[in-house]
Image (tube, rainbow, N blue to C red):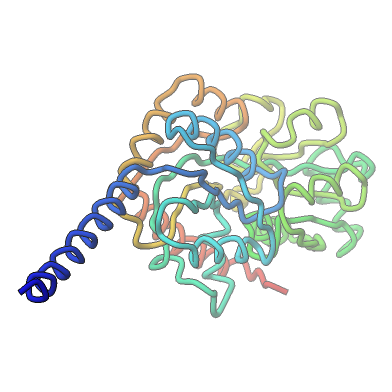
Length: 328
């Protein structure tokens, strides 16, 4: 008799234990986050995407109650770091701060180690921004007209650094070559930060960067700002013309930056991140910081964010084709 009772009791105990474990797991999941979060930046430190990650992550940390650690994983024009995010667990503890290169790479590469539209949850678009063409003072050009004249006199000799093959700066260099009928020598780096350092050291001549990442160097004369992309002047550089103003309206890409997570992100985690980012983006002090660093606040989440990125992928695919830019 005792044996029969025991036999009946065992499944009940196992069921209770299973339900308890499931309840604890659900509680842990819903209590997101309960440990630090990693934000992958697919470039080396120092560029505009890294700058934005370091501006937004401490404010998100304050509201989430957990530290967000910026993890720079540069290489292959952002593909290496982007792949890390795509292959990580969809639990909200790995995020990625992406930029325009995310949308450009599908147009450059025949095959990526991820699907740019299917393998990600597009948490939020954060900002758009112009980029500024800066030169090493030793190049001895102070205007776009002087640069074009020098480039035509020295074809293939002026070195134009990019944040990597397939980056927006790479494509913008190709646009400038086509529009001005010049031949700047493309030098790819593992991120804008590395390119900036080599400009300062005189090891390369030009690069395209977000204004906020080089304002001190421009103001001190360590870099010369020649022209800006975008449809309007940047208030922080009132004396620097747009490319349209110097007769090169074709050089007009707009950089954008956004946060992603691996596809399959639980709905309650996505909502938590959206709620936190809404509070951050609606903070006047933070919006002012973005503007002061050369970013235009642009906040979209959910379906709008996904549609935004899809449009950008199509746009940049055509831009790659039209520009004739190559990965080699």
